[in-house]
Length: 467
Image (tube, rainbow, N blue to C red; front, top):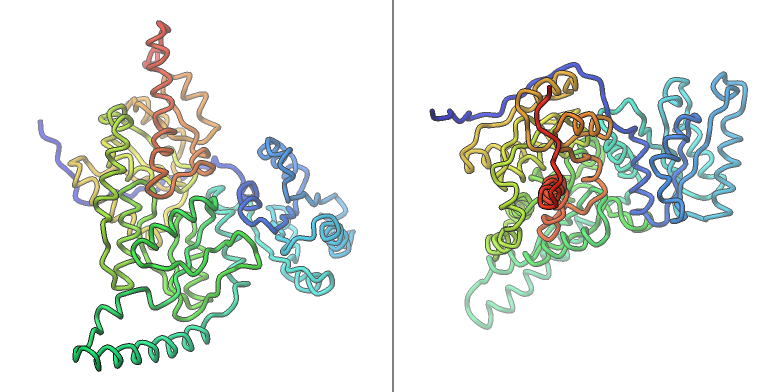
């Protein structure tokens, strides 16, 4: 019996609760990326307990974050919030002397209407250190949106590029005209096309927090295509934030940065390059091709580069080809990961996602459809805000080989004979670019390889059927 291949993606929306980490967890990776920063989380003891448990493994790394705990007097407006925050920030300046202090607002600061944005400029002038307010609270859909909130707030502090771009264009145009005149006088021909396509004529800023090594790899891949990256948001140091403004092109590397993209377009007047995200060899190639097409540059050797990576992944592909996977929805990377795994030969039953911004992920959704048609498999269901109870019932019927889920459901699913992988691990792993595709498959295949090893040792694997 032949399977009818759906031509379009199916979107559904349920009314499930959000079962993800709190977005204040973004502190865990952002404080490491922005080396001269200090994060001050303003919240209750519950927030402090969460940070202690979630980030406690980093206790020996001298983390640059702290907790400003609200007492009953703060919540009932009996104490002076400004004086207490000033005391803490003065102490931070004395102990660490950061280039920027980032206040992370929590649910409680939202509920009691704490005026962090009003206090920050006044305190910034008093202590002489920039203070950025980011309300990365639990009202967001997914924990990764904490980074989105911080980068959106940071985008307002980037220097202005508008005048610089215009002056740079005048200088470049003058230099090009002089070069054309010089070459024309010698050869009698005008080599306009080759000169104009030699490099990108406008600044390119990439946004999204990645380890410095991964950011360097992506910048190098673009450099090999004659594309120069002007800067990253966030930069490794706050003092090196990129210039933004009219004429600056921006491109994201993560699917959960829609708020940042909106700020860059509407407030900073940047031009957004809507590209798939550089996850997997296919996504990385499509990401580079889209950027090059915007600047009118023809890619060189990109197809061969992608093919070499696929060949290096042969052992992993043999293991997962034909296997099925079910995404419960947790970190907003689901569309990109599903697209890559489908290209690897896996069958995706369902893509659960806490929040779906179809505009920001439009290019990724198009690539997902193209990939499904290329691999001749049905389009997966995309379920926004999934109800986890319903999902478990669907998994009971489908019996996927792997479920990518939040930590809360991992053990119950394992007890029912379904292999699981924590979705949070994809946030802390290096998964972007050509060279890191192996790390994605390393995470995905670990539960499968574990079962194979147990069988080889003579151990019986948990029976995959519920009684």
